[in-house]
Image 1 (cartoon, each protein chain N blue to C red):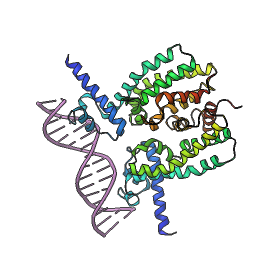
Image 2: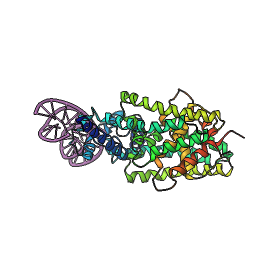
Image 3: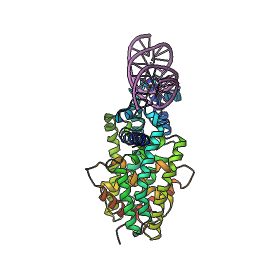
Image 4: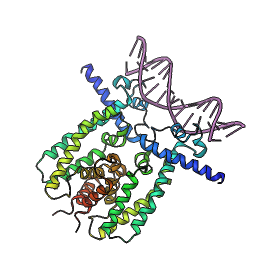
Length: 193
Length: 193
DNA sequence: CCTACCGATCGGTAGG
DNA sequence: CCTACCGATCGGTAGG
C-alpha cells in the first residue's frame, strides 16, 4: 500500500463522516473540530486535506452525485416503458435521498446555499447531469401521453415532491420507499391503463 | 399612542427585518447584530424584546403562519368545486411562499431545524392547522375521483412539490405564479374534464 | 498530520 | 433601549 492510498483513505473518511454530521446537525451546526474528532484527528488536521470547511461540503455533495448518477443514468438510458422507467427513477432517487447511510444528497438539499458561488458552480456541473436525465424521462412521459407537460416546471414540481420527502420521511414508520414511489407515480401519471 | 404600542412596533420591526435577513442569508448566516443594525438598535437591544435568537426565529415563523392561515382556511371552507378549490389553495400558497415581501414562510421551510425542540413544538401547533386544511382539500379531491389517494403521503407529495418552488423560483424570470399553479393542478389532477 | 496558537466573531448579560 | 463587556467558540494557519 502506497502513501498516496493512505492519504486518500483519510480524505474519504473525512468526507463520509462530514456527510453524516452535516446531515444530522446541518453545515453551520457542525464544526471542523467535530469532524476531526469523529475520525480521530486533531482540530487543525482536516485543513491538511481541504482548503476550507466549504470545500469539505462541496466534496460531500460531489461524492453523493457521483455515486448516484450511474444508476440513474442507466435507468434513463434503458429500454423500460415510460411509466416503468419513471417509477424506477423515482425509486432509485428515493433510495439516494432516504436510504440508510445515504447522507450525501440530503446534505446537498439542506445546505446548498452554504456553498460559495465558485463551489456552487463547480458542483452544479454534476447537478446539471442529474437534472437533464430527469428531463429526458419527463419528456418521454409527455411524448407517451402520460404527462400533461414536458416543461422544466413540470420536472421541478416532480423533483420537488420527491426531494421534499427528506423533510418528512421517518425510516420504519409509515410508508416504505416502494410504497411512496408507487403512490407518487400513481398521483403524477394517473391510474395505470 | 401608549408606550405599549411603541414597544410592540419595535418588536414587529425586529420580526419583519429578521424575516428578510434570515431568508436572504439563513438563520446561521445572520447575526443578532445584523438584525439590530437593520432596525437602528444597538447590538444588545434585541434581547430586550426576545429571550434568544431562536425566539426571534420562532416569531418569524409564527407571524408567517398567522398571516397566511385565514386566506387558506377561507378557501378550504368555501364552496368552490374541488378542482377550483385546489387550484385556489395552490395559488394562495405560492403567493405566501414566493410573493414579494413574503419572507416568513420561506424562513420556516429553510430553517425549521434550527428551532429548539420546545420552540418547534410551539410553532408546530400552527403548522398542524395548515396541514389539516390541505388534507381536507385533498380528501375532497379524492372523494370527487380527481386524485388517486387521500393519504397523508399524497398530501406531503403535493405540498412538497409546491414548497420546493422556494428553491428554484426566480421572480420575473420564467413562469409566473398563476402559470405554475395551473401547471401543478394539471399535472396532479390530470386534464380538465 | 500534530502542536500551539491567533484573530475575529457572536450570543447574551448586568446595570442603568 | 443603551453602555460596556464577557466567555466561549470557531475557522484557519505557521512551522515542524
